[in-house]
Image (cartoon, rainbow, N blue to C red; front, side):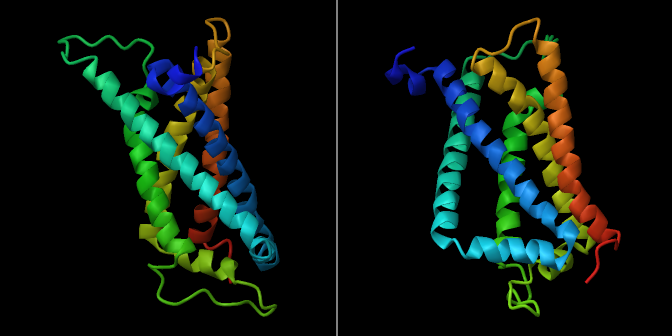
Length: 224
């Protein structure tokens, strides 16, 4: 495939989708590792946040790159969805989707749900626009992210929103990993069952790990 055809062809766009998706998946894992420091307590996540704040140039560069990748990934996803829809203008009376799954058939909608959840998450914790008061400091003068997360997830509406967002992420990752192997030519009929099992396992592990944070907070296991 020529370089100029990568963006103009459907196959090329799928490869770009796989590439941007793999970087976003990498961030999801890294973000999960950082968030997991909350299990240590204030000395875990507050120290982690303080360390990040000591590297402002790196953090903002990483955010800009991540934003660009996410925007491009969404843009490609919408384009592919519209192209696929246009190529199938007639809806048949009998739909055959032996290999299609719920996750694969609803990638556009789980993607939109993830984007909406991300906006809520940024407003909730990063920009603090939905918070009643600004981020406080802990006794050691560090941003008290530990208390912020506990107060932000102790109510039922927040717990439900985060759970729904994580369900969308679970479905999106499950099919996304499979698509990555298929789009890059690393999948074949013999390997496909193993790739499906690995994709399912990875998606479930990420889902449970992320969900454990709001669950233990809402259950009162983590306290101030």
